[in-house]
Length: 102
Image (cartoon, rainbow, N blue to C red; front, side, top):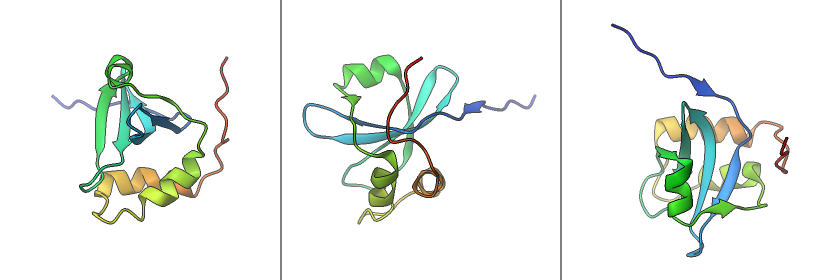
């Protein structure tokens, strides 16, 4: 049996918590959000629910996702292949810097 994950395009969003840790939401997969957290190690894509993001103290930042992606691509510890693909797409795309709530 072959299964495939559905990845939904969405507005990339920078989030930040009370410890000034930043992350970039790059896509969604079902009920999970695909997130790249800025940290000391190699950057990778992780899957988190909105509840997990909230429990970790993250809130939406008004920082530009495009600028964040460009910065993340220069991360000293490196960027995993999957994370690089998302970051390059965001860094070279014309997403709005503002979230639009409907």
